[in-house]
Length: 348
Image 1 (cartoon, rainbow, N blue to C red):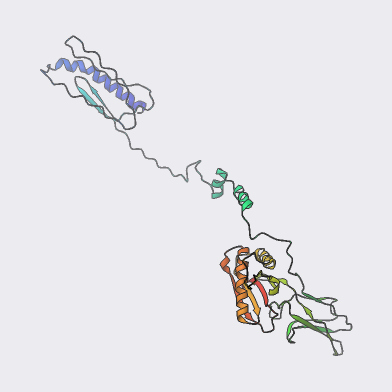
Image 2 (cartoon, helix red, strand yellow):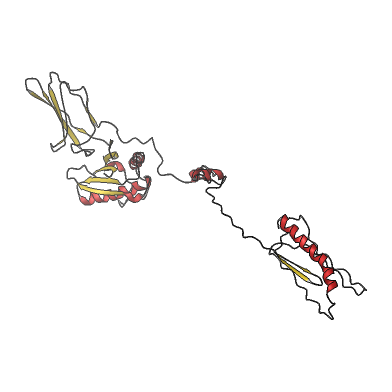
């Protein structure tokens, strides 16, 4: 109740109290008037009513006992919706309470700006490091880097050093065991002292490791005479290259070193080190969650398909992302080395 309403109510009660004797003087005394039943004043739920003064002890005189009601002034929480004063007459007051309307926009009120999601998270101060440290003490992370694995050669798979002079233009041909040209390099003028070859074929694919290759160097002088130099045969070991899709790795299947029992069945064990190193290189590429293609070349389709499925299953747990993105591809290559060859890279 506001001070203004409280004061108005007090003056109204005083007016009733002062007018009581005058009204009683003009009225004729009522004969055998039945006392009104006492009713409890209406209460506002949850708000205690002021303590009423104790009723006076009955007097031996014939005059009616006085009735009183005490309203404490200045008491916090004394709120009335209605007030009933009972005496010889009963006076009931109803206090109108205006409807409380709160029109508040929290997005525009000063001091209520929630801020960004990062601001809200930083207010509570969550510890984002302790859970990972606790997990790292017990969990085994398959995607951890293993720098001590170095079974793949990087850079050139072969280097040619022609020792010729008086050359106007030259060409270097790399051929496989069947005499087919797989790579060509050429230039004008004196050839460089060393010509590297990255192991790519003319169509951009990777040549098969463990295959025997040879080369022919052609030198043309200013008069148009051609000289051919036949080089010794060589083999390509496990190697890796980089292209627009990411790292690409190639190796012979015999380097997998599967663990088998006496019946020739492969035992369930950790992946061979060369597969773990393959996963390490793939995980370091940009967008490392792309589909991975395992291409196996063997002398028969069944051999290539079985090997591709086995390698994909062993490689998937060591790669970041969904294991289902690793798939195998079988290629029949009649002149493939015994056991086949493997090429791993991101699908184009």
